Image (cartoon, rainbow, N blue to C red; front, side, top):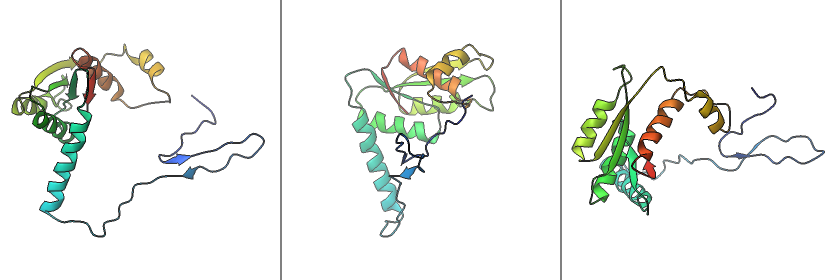
Length: 168
């Protein structure tokens, strides 16, 4: 829908000057995957759990109601596990479900919610709901064609009923 508009790659910058040709983007940052001196085995696992727990705990510092998106997948389950470990009250979790079992992860989410005794909300999404299309076009800052945009909006909408901040 846009002509001659391009997205910079992650970690790049571009400086455009009037009356000068447009330069190539310049990379200013990248993730280093240097494995020299890396730990092995159980040490790595223990360090990962420790660092991950610290990261989640740091993000739980809030003066507003806090919760988490819970799909039942590895990522969201790990976040909820760390939140439950760091909290003295039940974590607010929310999940959306789909009528098609091929895409529905709500049973997995329910198991995780039960395991960590969360305050869990589930709402089914209508796969034929196209009412958000016009709204989503206005929300994204770029052309966006990811089919997860609608369910993501719906899970945010569900979360907002009980929390102001949701970890994911």
